[in-house]
Image (tube, rainbow, N blue to C red; front, side, top):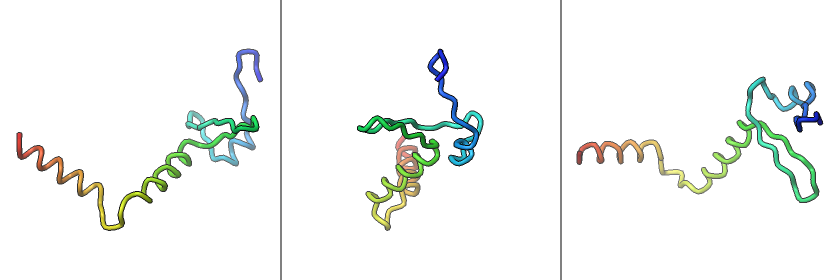
Length: 76
């Protein structure tokens, strides 16, 4: 660790994670004090998959949002 608190992630690790310059990542620390580094796109994909589990297969959220917006616009 540098004196200013910055940590350098070695290029091999960045390559393994698919991290690009300026790319976002999430760093967490578990109960045992282990640091986990995960690309932001992976975290977003995982959360999207989790949320999909709460949406019935016959529901299209984009269609519902569009219908709501059209209905609101019609009342203006």
